[in-house]
Amino acid sequence: MPGIAVIGAQWGDEGKGKISHLLSEGVDLVVRFNGGPNAGHTVVDSYGEIRLHHLPAGALREGTVGVLAHGMVIDPWVLREELQEVEKQGRPVPKLLISDRAHVILPHHKEMEVGSGIAKSIGTTRRGIGPAYADKALRLGIRFADLADQDVARERLSRLEGAHRNPYRPPMDPERVVQELFEFYAAFKDTIGDSIRTITAALAEGRNVLFEGAQGTLLDIDLGTYPYVTSSHTTVHGIASGAGISPKKVERIIGVLKAYTTRVGEGPFPTEDVGQLGELLRRKGMEYGATTGRPRRCGWLDLVALRYAQRVNDFTELAVTKLDVLSGLPEILVCTAYRIGNERVEEFPSSLMDLSHARPIYERLPGWKEDVRGIRVKEELPRAARDYLRYIEEALGVPVRLISVGPKPEETIFC
Image (cartoon, rainbow, N blue to C red; front, top):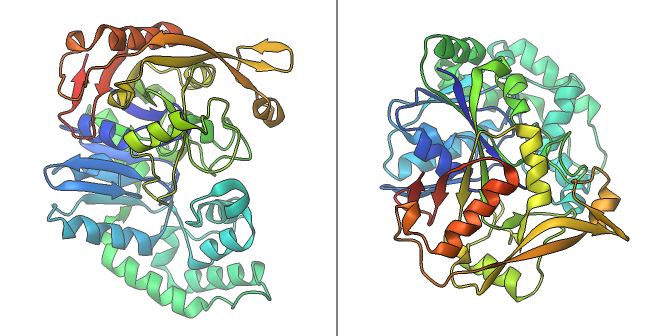
């Protein structure tokens, strides 16, 4: 059976956690292939609400293995705290497989992120993600496979400390860090292994594999709004490199998008509303970062950006979340093109300067007054809500197969 991918179509925070958890029933493996503890996937179920950072949302299902693949960077200290939080809620301990090729986020990576000023200028999560990926590219990183040999780990930590020595911060104590890493390795060594072999074998045997993306298309290191992006590949293309499988193995690609648009951190956002509408969306949608708690910037749906996301990922179907947040609005605006200078632009620009000067050209659609949270059949939605969904389908050329009308799992419409 081909793999299924859940990919964010906007600037992240689209609700991938809920969608992944819903689709993970009966799935054998749920694979995170990019990012690290900068993810904030929220799941609401019979145990309550939990926000996950490393763990795939689907890994909360009993019998499902959560795979942290080599495309991730993993903070052992944060991962251990996350697992403790899962147990504190009375949940079964997730079954995990940590790739032995995945790189370790070390304490100095967080210090580097904050000290360099990048965290403030770009608006990062301050979790050490960028510096960890940078060390990986510089061939200075430490992988989980390296923790099996204490001498190798010590040598690499000493090399790292020498490369990043800074007179303005206390030096890293390689021996203390090594000992803490060895404690983690001793506790988790049975979960560390060859994730590529496990994933490819599962696909070859016809077992169900779900690939859960973190962040969103417009935050991709290559394809997003650089430099206001994350440090990994957040699109469907990240699955091949981050999980080590052939792209041919992923046949269903589910693009997750909010019924409006949000963004956390700095960077251009053409449809942002800094007035009453933006505040209304933030309040009704509870738009605060699951990882940082920062208020999200909010605005109308941007079809220019979504058409670009569709071209990049070739979604086979869409999941539209937070449709309920738009209830009560007399009309809904949808951005169909930009005005940059005197030119009408319908393609998402690669130039950050152009995007910064882009002014949205809106089409106005009728809103609806009815509360939709209790609706479970698409045909029972208000006419204006159905027309809005149809408008999105026609604009992107992709069917909407799932509609979220609230945070709870049952507040979902399957089409």
